[in-house]
Image 1 (tube, rainbow, N blue to C red):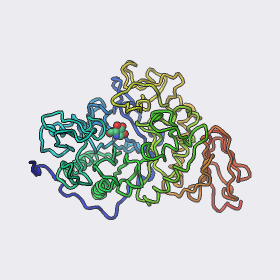
Image 2 (cartoon, rainbow, N blue to C red; image 1 turned 30 degrees about the horizontal axis):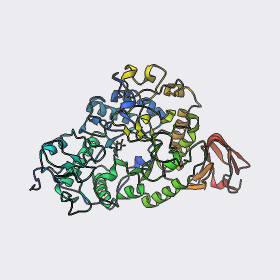
Image 3 (cartoon, protein in one colour; image 1 turned 30 degrees about the vertical axis):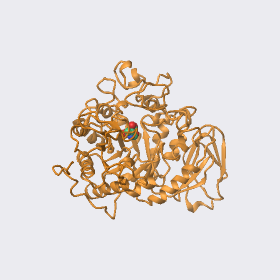
Image 4 (cartoon, helix red, strand yellow; image 1 turned 90 degrees about the horizontal axis):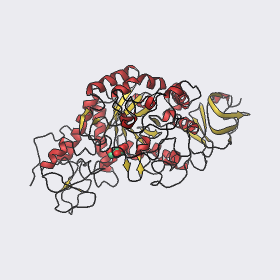
Length: 550
Ligand code: NOJ
């Protein structure tokens, strides 16, 4: 019989939930840029991106106007799941550099007005993590979820690979054992279940705080939190998991009130009231995100059906699913945090995918960067890099039918070898460069004021210049069909037409008055009330309520 291990910390000082959570002021205006470290820029020529490579491009990111960089995991790992299998939370993987490189990068970024967020993987480790290696030796170790049963409790359990008898619960791939944050419900048939306040779960919560504090103390602004929903097991309404994050938030508010958590939960109406600062709409929870740009032509072509999305040339989608989810989340959040809206990420297709070409995606950015969500731009989307089908799996990227590698190809910087990503031999690159001779590059688009990169830069600058385009001002949708038309606050009107047809909308009489176009690409206004939106167009106008009669 195992005794409670009192020799290691039991999460002493677990804080009570605070009654007055605070929001870091910077978060409201953040424009976040996701860097997939292995694919961004390779400075040492080994074919894999690294921190000195990112350092070389900080000026470009500053020029683009984003202000927060989120790095997918860059910690020591056997890379069975591209780094989401962490073997040491406190050490940068040698292939990316050293902790000193990361600290220097944080400082160099800060001097350019850029914050750095890291990726926290709280629900599981690699099976190579020393915690798991000792758990394999010690039948009393309760850091992971172990079943002592002599037969497998179910198909999801993995037989011990060490002297310890029994089975462990993986959280994702079998090599990613679930850390033990307890179960929301006990079950006599599963006597290994531990409550959330058992010593193991308490120690794991304390360990998470220690990991976060370690990086916060080195200047990190926050964490994207991997599978934040997954921590407490058998928690059908996620109430126990929400309580765990409420406890974390109370600690953050007390110790690090200017740092933020951005969760991979996918359900902001649950996660944000629980204490997470911002949560994504994601491809795997409902359809709000997929109804925007999930055109079922990339990584999720088989898995997610074929319903049309709104931002597609065919013009057969609808904004209703998104707007409904938005209203629900907005009401539940009630100003206590944000919904984050990604262009794409390392798990699902880029905006440029299938029939949606580079020439068609500027309206998606116009929407993303004028909607009161937190915009998150996936590296390369700002130049219209495409989702590349047909690539072999890399580091666990192929997930059933989902070819995630198509969204993970090297950044395209210029017209030199390997698109300027690396000096390695093309065969040694992390993933192949897009072979299209017309592939977009940063260098070419910087030289072309009509390029997508310049559209995105202008939109980011507008959002910074006019707070009404950011998270703070109300949004009122005037037309949810094609074109999408909405006002921001009392001062701005946005028109977005992402389809291949000319579209029109007649504004309510006097709505626009004497409007000033801030940017228009294919949108014109006749008589002050009739909007004409050409294919793949957008327009952002400033108007004054006082000018309604004009
Ligand atoms: C979500 C991450 O985004 C994904 O890439 C990873 O494979 C799983 N979590 C497991 O950590």
